[in-house]
Image (cartoon, rainbow, N blue to C red; front, top):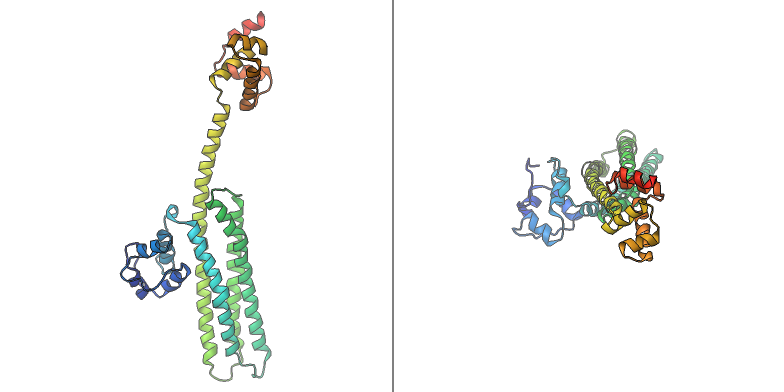
Length: 322
């Protein structure tokens, strides 16, 4: 592994020839081989893959795990990558490992129950992984999709997911695969050298490493990127709400005139005559005033008018005296 942080202008061919781990990432992103002398950016752009997101996952996976700039990442591209990884695990990696494990196990040994238990234990492990990833498919990915479309779902969902994600990683999946390895290494009744079972153990180690990296990408890249977008959405939502409230509370000049006359005690007809408008228009303005200010009583409207310097308190006192 090179101590090299790959950038957009690096050649894709150099990456593929130097970093074996990049091949799987390239596969998940649906990028081709036969890239000639094109840069990473050129290959990504030609295949509609977000370059900064590709580089963030690439550099993380090959060990160059400097914190990415989350504002530059594409949540949609991240989720597509993770969904492709799910498909790889369940359509190829885990079924292939199970077939190899069955092929390697010798059922003619003196204690045939052990091989059966190993297969059963492996199936339980796959079930744990399946439940873990199904939860992501049903909870995490739809949440991200809504966020990308500009909808701000309940933000507690992501924190609940993050807590559950760490718990599952630490207490179930990691422990299960360690137990599987220990079961084979300590108790498999191998009466002679078994190259296949050793090869299976190597594959189990690789699968464990791949799943751990997959979970870490979710914890250390996807979840922080989600929180960054959430924060940005919340700021926008707050600003929009403040603007909406300001617009809702702001009275037009004509509405202010009607309000002043209401506070002065004039009837709808008197206001209409004074302002040279119809009674219907006065009633419409009064409804708008009430809706905008959410104030229904004359006393409340009077307080609003005084506080906002539409009438002077002494003027109101004179009216009351008269």
